Length: 405
Image (cartoon, rainbow, N blue to C red; front, side, top):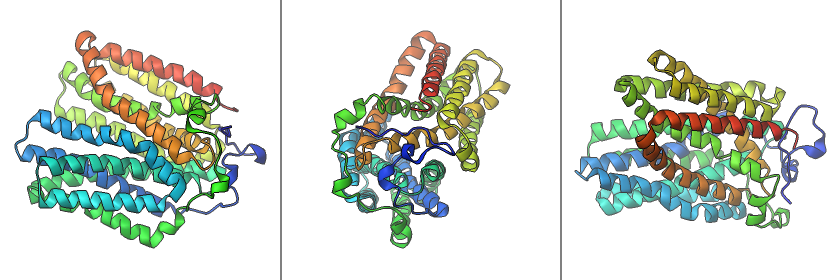
């Protein structure tokens, strides 16, 4: 049976604390190391994705070809996500990280030496695979260290590093293609996985090794994801990434509908990202004093009302504060939900369940722009935002009921 311990509050009885199979290994994690590992891990794949698109455009490939190359980084990982999770469960987190580093450096080296549609396709696919590999390994690694209260704080620091990597990688690719021209950008991006390898050699011992086979839960994967106590957490775990993907896709459409400039679009998205990042910085300071699912519920109320208001207002002055409110909800909600998600997976099978989450999230990320674009073309973007906001309000009620389960 999947062990449940969603609620982590001060004074909670020891027997209901999460992750009992790891309580004897309360290893402190250096926050600077965690943020640095996450930043370097995500800067490589994200930078490679952008570099592939820029290189393809630089070589005169059509937008359709660029779209296919970009899609490979989302579709191919869906095939390997669950096997990657199983590898992490069996081998620990350090080995898979080194494997991903080697794969990414090799693919970037080929794209640098022999730029062409085949090597660009390979680089895109490998970037997506390594993104999943790093995601599963780091999330499982963070779950397996520290006390129950420290884990949510650790997840918050992890997401701070992820945010930094998401910013640094694409910026490096953009400036690199301008400064170096041609395939030189791939050599520049390769500096991130190489730096990650050095950091792993130096500080990688802070991440846990494999869980003993005797500690693995006999629960099968299908039983785990269908368990009545774990299934709600699995479903809620899709909410934050979907919110982020949808918001980044919808804002340019809303801006075009409202006649806003490109700089205004950048300001709105920048406000969203900044609020998300800032909220993750402050979360560790009070996370031990809050009821987690109540906070998640309230955050989804804020995001739901924000999306509805985004669809109804017509004054651009309101877009920035609304974007900040939605960004705050995303930034704080993700660490709390992911800590509950990974922590309530069957013992020794957290990576496998993370693989399921990545498969579902990859499908949502690939399909949501198509669905939103098609519906928006027929009805306009406002109904899309109203429906999305209403869905978040329903999720908020759902999350509140999970407190104490």
